[in-house]
Image 1 (cartoon, helix red, strand yellow):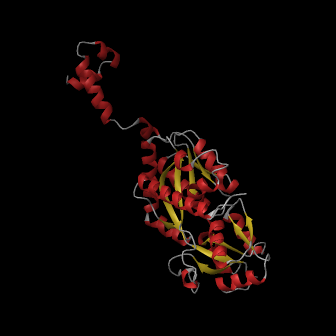
Image 2 (spheres, rainbow, N blue to C red):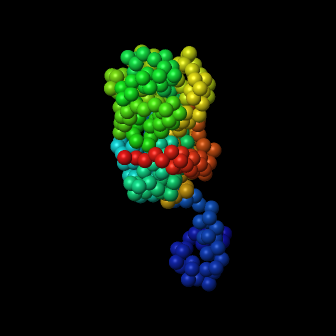
Image 3 (cartoon, one colour):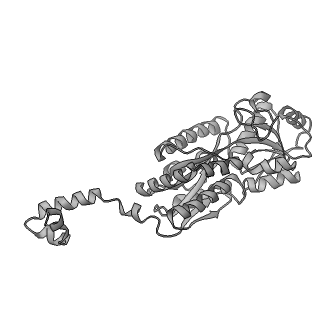
Length: 343
């Protein structure tokens, strides 16, 4: 019998009491070192909740549901999406940060919840996103547009600003909540143009912003193309600018913000997967690998592209965390420099 086999045939307690305990203890240490972590082997062993900080229908909800469905197939346990809209995304943000760090509560967040809110709501948040959540990977990026309700008969940004200047208090703009990037992007535009409009925040995100634009309750908004492309094609919403670096084939003839003399206004909107801080590294790695493999499939990329979601995976969890930290600092400086405060 080999030394390893001999040690395996005895209980560890007997081994450590025996004269050969030192040799066998060394074997047990070697075996433990070689064995995969138990958490990685067993995870997931039950239902995993995937929190979404907005209502159904928006881009965050869309990518969360696509990913959850395929994680369920890949990891052979249910990944169930749970919408928790409200408080500019902070309800889901806090719930995920306060959850047990075991991989069974995840968050699909974005630049608003996980980069902007830390500074925007520092006075009310009971958590610190950069400290209490850990990034797993960026998932997708989404082109954004400046959209208007069909009855607002303007063809471009300059005409919209001219109308606002001549009709103070007559225009309402929608956002996904106070401090969301659609809100801050519009504040940038209004400050640059030196005009005022009335802010109408919606706790349900794009799922509520879109109906408000279609009905004319609000007249314009920065909003993602994923949530609006079908309504643009049907004529129920119109795009007058894109925040992308170049014009988009999906909305031909719509000029960029830069082409309309408003360079630098508009956000690179990403969606990402997060877990509570303290979640075991092997669980983080397992979720990173599974998510990366799923979203790297050609058929997934093609299907998401049709919904205006561009797969943009991180090189590693550490790479994603670096991005989130960088954007958290940048947005914090913008909010502080412009003295923006949530009511």
